[in-house]
Image 1: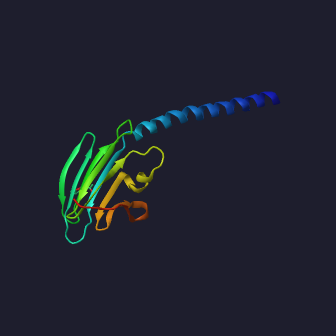
Image 2: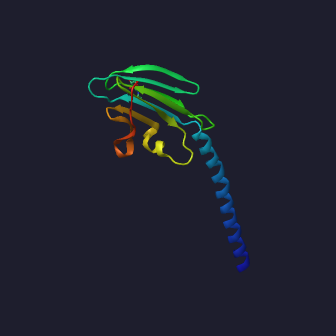
Image 3: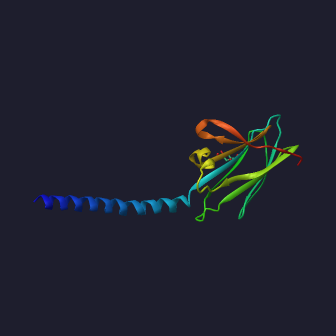
Length: 153
Ligand SMILES: *[C@@H]1O[C@H](CO)[C@@H](O)[C@H](O)[C@H]1NC(C)=O
């Protein structure tokens, strides 16, 4: 009797572990697959002072997003899905009347989520200011200076 209760318990625990293992793995792989197609939006904002306009030219390997002359406070933005291989990459060339900066505005992160942590609701907000280019850190409600301007255009 005791031994049959024991084996029932063993059977029950085994089934529970097996169920967990089986239900756990498909969920995980579905999550990994879905993350290959997340929808993101990148913004580039003219936060310059003195009524200066901002020239913006952004690209990926497959897309040229064209050139834009942004008035103070204006922005350019675009949305996209990350590709299955995790190689989605966008970069921009920014220019004011006296300086420029060229940098990556979106990339897929495999281990550290430095960018993703700042892009709340998958919106990455880059802001050109007088002393450099900032990325909005949404959870902390502050803009962080990430790139310096290089003199010359
Ligand atoms: C994207 O940019 C356009 C043009 O500046 C603006 O009107 C629109 O509100 C922006 N969209 C989002 C989702 O921020």
